[in-house]
Amino acid sequence: MNRTSTNHKLDDAILPELQKATGIGELQLRNFSPGVLDARSKLQWASMRHTTRPEDVAYSLFGVFEVSLPVIYGEKIPGALGRLLAEIVSRSGDVSVIDWVGEASSFHSCFPTALTPYRAPSWMQSVPSGPSTHNNADLEKGRELYNTLARLSSPRFVAGRLELPCIVHRLTKVKLLETASATSYREYELVASGLVPLKLKLSSRLQEGSGAGLPYVLVRPWSPKLLDLLSHDNALGSLLEWLSQPFNALLLHSLLHTEYKRIVSDCPIRANVKDLVSVVNSECRILEIV
Image (tube, rainbow, N blue to C red):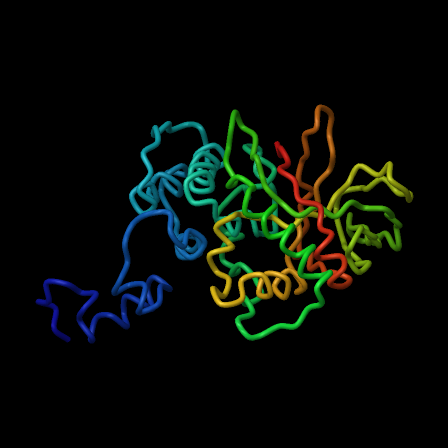
């Protein structure tokens, strides 16, 4: 092995060892550049690391993401990691950062208490690029939806609140199906506007019932930057096809003063849209989440 190379990332003998030790792919090792671009992948790489001082789990990533934040030893992991993730989301608009399952942080309900949940890759259906056919009524409503999504501001943190643009599906029915006696988990059937009914196991207790008075919504996080992923030849058709695919939803509880709080689960909430009519009639809003 040639250990005299001035750049180990370009050494074909050492590169495989670097990949094995770091879990980072060859392309990313060869072409790495700091910044918030592709933040989810960088969080996944860091999720396997261990540090002597707890807060260094976050502080050691400041250079990786090119962020300048105060180092405050003693704030513990939730505070250090929460400040880092809030900065990443505000600067990048990358909603994949809030796509995780596990225990919520005391810093914010949309962040995990540690980096370990990022070991699982973010799940998102590929963006369709082929031709699509829709009738004129769908296309007219689809253009309105496209313009609405394009006008939404990017996700950002303000005074400890996440201002999250999203597509909202209001729960109209919550039914308890089963309570596991050996664990604290409960299985619920959830019915939401525009979605196929789904079953979900939670440790949290939900208010049962039906009708418009339920304080829960399932949301699809959004960022206007996602429109850049669409086919330039058929952006509208690609958007409608993409939004018709299953997605990972967040379950939010409505609080006082128009605020929401995330209810976490130990498995992804995989939601399926009913049909194209449900897509083009989507409710798009910016929610304040604490």
